[in-house]
Length: 281
Ligand code: SF4
Image (cartoon, rainbow, N blue to C red; front, side, top):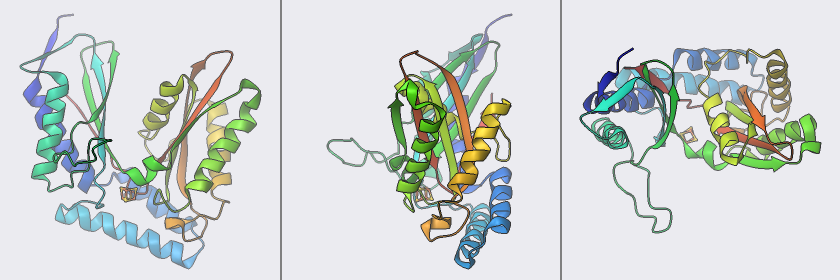
């Protein structure tokens, strides 16, 4: 198989489009999950919030305006075939240029800054870029503008192996309970179990990309997802933290082998504004 060339300009154009679409068009699976949440919610206030979220999604799509004032920090997952060659520019620069243009042309708020000086960088760059090299010559880009209500309430813990499954459940439940209203519930609770410190966190974030309504293919993990979802929805946090049943729309778990001496667990909370878009070049 020969090498397939991908133009850096195409990457920039695609990232620009995905940034705008992700910020204005909520995925059909997320809308379906919110509709299901409305049916499940028992509190009157909670039901009103679900109706407002669905109405908000409709208006944002129809008028091309952002779903939320927090337009997030852009996280980009790339699956890059090992037979792909990027030509005409630098991969990271082409992505950041796409973010710059998307946020400028889409009138989206720029939120990135230097963590010490805390002066806004003005164009929402740089993106957080995760590249995975895979077989073949596909090039897949996934953009998640991540809101920081959820990001701020996310946690990583290195548990002892003896903590086991019970320790994992306790950590996830405590994290969601302590988060309360801050991550703008109801959203998705992404959980990464295993690997190293950073691997667990990336697994948790990547788990958010799974289409809503789909359980993990491994039966044991699927059962754990459902058990945690049921327990989270008994915490009483509810939509926007105002009390009620639906604190989370779902729990997604991904796992990876870890060291005999450790049990890393990460919880990445996603808000109700679950924005992500993908494209294959
Ligand atoms: S956490 Fe999500 S819903 Fe809340 S303000 Fe940020 S982007 Fe908006």
